[in-house]
Length: 465
Image (cartoon, rainbow, N blue to C red; front, side, top):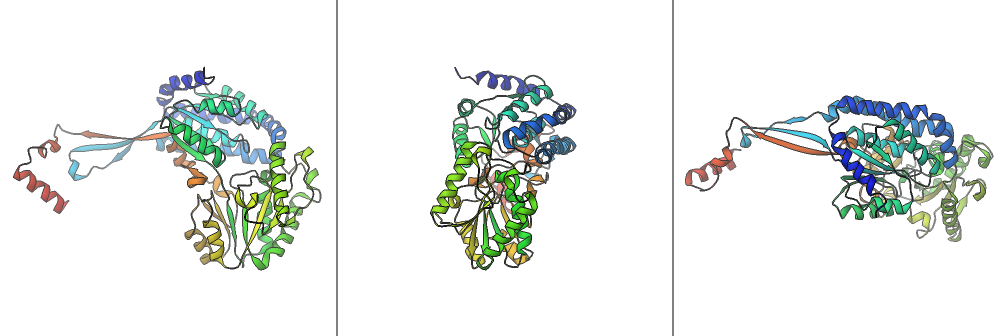
């Protein structure tokens, strides 16, 4: 027997009730979620310290505030999003009245990752509930303390059946994917995303896949190197680089390679002091398996004769890996080919901008491109001549925090969009409704038999309408 069958049946049974909820009821449910999350703030601090070594301030900003501010935003927009849209009908359909209803999809599955286990679990839950769905959440078992706390918080915040949580490993995930969900929202790597999509295809289940990939940084020769280094040191050290939208490699003007390494070292010292390994503000690698992966990739790059800058040695006993730079690594190295998801940062020299653009375009389409430039022409070329899920100019990561912007990738880096009205619509079906009015049905007048006068009417329509 499938161990997740009861969960699926429960979601299917509750889905009609969830779909019938009003704006006020959905707002109230989201308000309870916000209140419960804040009531467990210190519990989340402890859980994230245990799982990731996450500083409490970063937990507040990147996890808790991200969820509570989203609740406020969605609650304020929800009435407009749920409102039936009136659509004018063309003269050829007269007399008819048309509208679009945004109805819930039904029973939905949310599969969340470990790197931001609160934010990336609860944010899609917020949109799914706002859209009137019954939800089953599977948080990542790789962050077990947070996963258990999420289950307690959601049980406390929602009535039985509306949002349920299931704990488990890859086998549990596989079991969940065997059911004909009405929608699956998955956040994780492209390789697992392919598995999710393949499983969903068996039931023609719609999917949202928030994936990742190798997000490049274009550095303009005229951009101040010290400023670039400060931004890169902050962005690559956040969560120890374990972020899907972290910069994955930097395209650097060849003559500035040495200056950027020197400036990066100073910028990192300004952030964390002389002994990064002892600083509690620097997040740890999630577990020994991922640390070993990063160490293997590091050794792979060193063996391929890449020049390496590392401020201090990595330490598996503390799950510590420092931000590390690799100067012009071999294209066959793992760090050149795979999404890094850690604090390793290749620096790729270029001589002409068209060479840098060609380098990016030769890879899969990234989740985001970053551009460090005050030059409008440089900015426009990098945007116009590449394709990506998003672009951020002169900063990193901030597009994720903009609720009115769609968030998601392209092809290899993701399918579908979340955030804002796009997040709501991922969990709804846009259902058109057309009504004939006044008992008049002109389409019957133009049906068979096709007499001469009907042919003349059709000819007139083609000429004048």
